[in-house]
Image 1 (cartoon, rainbow, N blue to C red):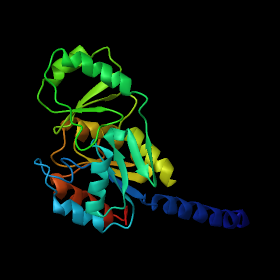
Image 2 (tube, one colour):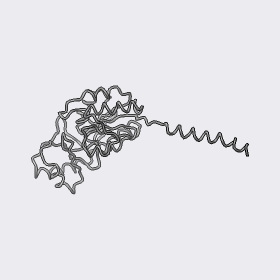
Image 3 (tube, rainbow, N blue to C red):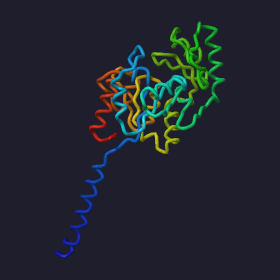
Image 4 (cartoon, rainbow, N blue to C red):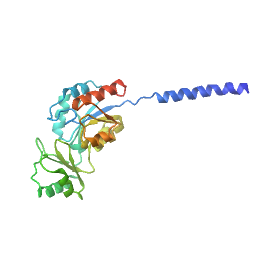
Length: 250
């Protein structure tokens, strides 16, 4: 009996050590995706330099994820020095070495626009270049009334607080993040995603960790894994600083 106990004890020790090692594993994210308007900018769309500084010191890729057109997304990436990986037009256009776009649903968006033009005076936001996967409009009409008119349409109407987008229900920043991740050879769950607006919700859900800055829409805060006290760029700085402190990003 004594001999049997001596043989079992080493097995018990091994099991305990194995359990401790599993519990000590830390998730380390491989990339960051960050929205532009209202996240790294103030409400007047001026750049919050606190966000710029926090993003530039990262040793992992930073993806600019925006509802604006590709040339604007590229310009933002250039100014921030983030390497030029972008998600534009709310996921309809992505760029990582090459540009990919999904314009297969633009007819649905144009049909929806024609309906709305019968009821509202609309101003398209196609400057400095036309959108190819969605339609951007100035915020000068009632979004809820527009949604009622398009209740049977195969499109979403998203108000970001900076523009109103008519877009396919099948395209969003979440689908854009998944495609960019594939192009980069990683998974969407390897990302930290940071945003402020309802058009960031799918991206926040697709990422391994979703962050809502302090000024974010309540609907985004509900699905985020982290909500910062700081607003705009201060929130970006706060989130990245905390993740660096915890060893979850480098």
